[in-house]
Length: 133
Ligand code: THU
Image (tube, rainbow, N blue to C red; front, side):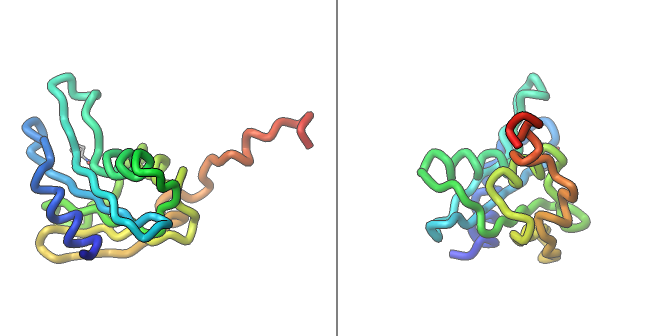
């Protein structure tokens, strides 16, 4: 099973009655296992969750903690990029060199890196306080 196949399949289960924009995400973890997620909207709009968040939650629940590659797909006129919040969520578990593939259901795709999507990211190193070093 490829990430494209997995994300395409899970996207069908997206719950997106409000935006009608179904998104699927699939990631490969350090163990080699694939985890998937889809967007889950809510009538209280801000309570909806993105596909990437679902895939990350599944990975953590299963005991993996490292993303080695991730793919996101939607029926979009151009390859769909993760939203800003998802970029931060992915970066918690993906190094700057990790490939993020943005795909469309029509077959377009574009590969970028974590560093491309979230340059200058906030990380744990920024929380070291002056009396710690
Ligand atoms: N969405 C995702 O699931 N991932 C993204 O990276 C972009 C946006 C979802 C959220 C919402 O359910 C719908 O797409 C429209 O914004």
